[in-house]
Length: 239
Image (cartoon, rainbow, N blue to C red; front, top):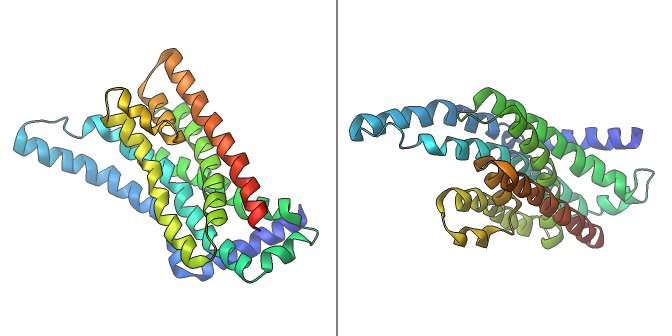
């Protein structure tokens, strides 16, 4: 584990050398503060003018899930830029033939970073949540975001030929939020057009109870696992 620890330490130092990448790690807290104080205030203002005191309240969970789902994306973006640079400069190939190996590289660059993002997102939500999301849902959401952070970065690295393309592809990672919006706002079977998104199924799990909720949770993790295995395979081919 020593090569992994050394590699991970260097990786984190590279991230914090870049002010923009370092700032990405603060965005979940900024979003948490904005949602915690801004959304209820906006709801109160709307209530004062319209008399509807529950205009935004039914969607508080959507704001909380946004932080859970976006935290690994923010951290992943910070790591993505370093990984692409290492691939472009040949550092990735060099490290893969050292005692670290490719599996160690993936562990130090993706798994550990995503694990930190998952714990970070859990803490942020624990402090700033505005819905009645349960501890179980927060814990499962963190585990879910852990998998999401890994496969999403693997996918972008596999599709991008350089840092410029990586930046462009990373912008499309916002498609993950389409899952929660479909689950919240589409009431008929058309919502299942978003069924290929694990975030859709996890949101449906949070919105429902009973056997359907368990099934939705299972599908969200199963899809994440399939995407994880597929994108890791692509990543190793492109490395």
